Amino acid sequence: MELTAEKYHVVTEEELERVRKQHSWVADPIIKASEEVLKEPFFQWLKNVKSVQELKPVVIQLWYHSATFPKVMGLMLGLTSLKENHMMPFYALHIYGEAEHHEMLMEWMLKQGILKDRSEIEEVIPTVATNACVNLVYQMAIEQDRSKWLACLNSGIERCSNHFFIEMTEKLDELNANDPYFTVHVEADEHHSILGLDHLEEAKDPFRQEVIVRKALEGISLWGFMLNSWIGVNRMPEFDLDGTLLNPQK
Image 1 (tube, helix red, strand yellow):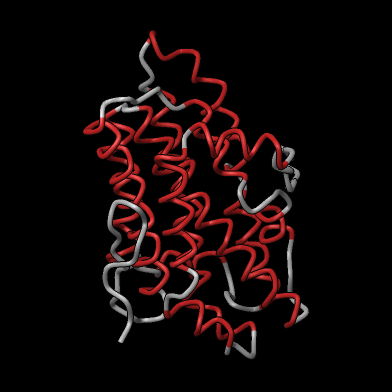
Image 2 (cartoon, rainbow, N blue to C red; image 1 turned 60 degrees about the vertical axis):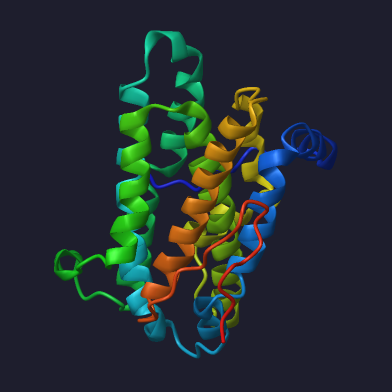
């Protein structure tokens, strides 16, 4: 199968601002917390990387994450109830956009000599934090709570992922080793994930809003925990309801 680098749907700033304002009760904490993740040890480490080979502990874990997430998304689609059928095209498009990315990453790792052959990846043991991040999404797929899914995965985790790939792309440009696997994730505005909130329920009950916000922030915490674990740092950022970091680094 030909490997392609699908482009994200590019939207106007006006459209993004409309969604932000409409769902500010969840969008604002997501934006604030995701910006804090950029200050985590992983990104400080990345700035000091001098060779592609130094990225090996990161990209082999990233491969597992990249190969697993489309399967979890497929579970969300497969378990969709009849009354939620209107969401099927949204889920399917997300799966389609991600399904072959892990193969693009594999070919890049082989090209760069990070792996000698494909079978090497079978020797990689996912970190506890990587499994925690993936398992959170499995849990949400089983639960079938659309708003939790959209706020946590499509908005919180996807926004953090977008930031990650922006930083990785800049580093790989510096190392003259960039690849469509990395650049495809940064072709859209860095806030593209906020658009997932357009499918969110109109949650007017304060407790329901808190449930959704906490789930989004849980995803962002686990994403930061996962990235730090890839460089051997045991740290998980934690946030209050407005997205303020509760445990700053000492």
